[in-house]
Amino acid sequence: MDRHIQIKLVERLREADPRLRWSHADRSMANPAGRYVDEDWFRDERQALFRECAQFVGLSVECARPGDYLTRDCGGVPILIVRQPDLSLRAFVNACRHRAAPLLKGDGSQGRRPIVCPYHAWTYGTDGSLLARPHDEGGFDDVADPCGLLVRSVVEAHGLIFVHPLEGATVDAADLLHGAEREFAGYGIESAHLFDRRETVWPINWKLLLDTFLEPYHVRFVHRNSIDRTFLSHQLFDVFGPVARPIGLRRSVLDQLESCRPSDWRLFPHAAAQYVLLPNALLSYQGDHIETWRFEPIDCFSTRVVTSIFSPSEPASEEERAHWQRNFDILLQVAFEEDFPIQKDIQDNLRSGAIGHVHYGRLEPALIHCHGTINAMVEAWRDKRGGEDERR
Image (cartoon, rainbow, N blue to C red; front, top):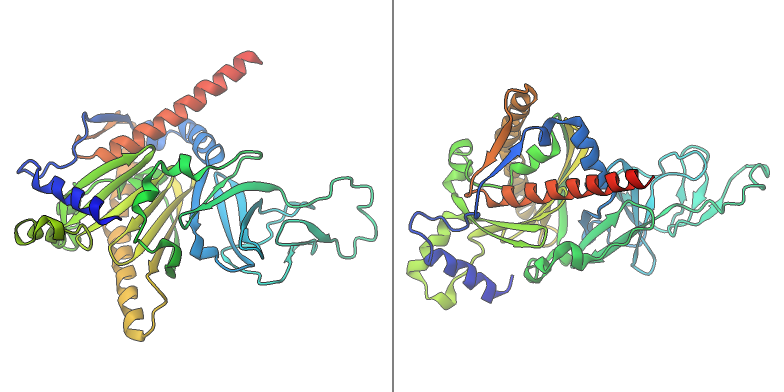
């Protein structure tokens, strides 16, 4: 983030209300409980947000060398992203054109090897072209389709990778980031090192898990024995189109207001900037490293959570490795042991049918922005579908 932007943000703290109300929304929001637990809403949400919208699937450094690949679930569509020999990316439906068996699993590298289906060994180039059908005995000679992998749109920009799972759709990074990328300078996104990744499955709606990261109001209560010692229960908040950017503030951020000249103010390392990449991802810059979270809905009440931590470079010593491991362990402990169990309890209460709405206060602007955006996208999709049904 540019120094000028950092100084402007810190200046907002000096000019703020003495009660530290730095980023209140204009008004509060009541969100129907069904937005979290109604399976009909989830069905439409999955179509509108995850099948008909581009999604963040990872950082470029996770798929950096020719032959490296990522596999993702985008609203139920299995996606395979492969780094090409010319260092471009290509994305495909992760299914063999013979009998639709998955081709690759997880993230990894093919190197220079072709992609071979584990079912009948149909063989594909990393460009998706069909190279061979071993031992087919001419049994497919009358198939007119060349049977190359089904292509999907992928774009790489500012060290981020986005994929659209819908056939024929295009992806424009500028439309997805709306200028948020201007703050990425200095974060080291394009040169970071993937230190560790953890994939877990939780019996919780994906939005409840995302909510954990959208407000610091709970910090002084839920995290009183952990990060409350370090972080304030208030945040700076801005938006870039659909991208919300809450900034969590360490208590040390206030000290420099009195001890330093304005030209020496720094937001980092006194803050953590989080970029909510709708529909289901979070990119967090912590001042000395990067974290990403992806929340992949399995169904209305279960979510696959993928957590990654990126160090500035590959650790050069055991001491450095231990440092980043401690960071990752604390990150997971706070989320998994303190945040997520409460979300499961909230979900149980919402499923009871006794609660009509949840309320996001003006001091929770990221919740208001993100849920307002999600609701508007789903309602727009429903209106569009309704119009199409009428025309039919």
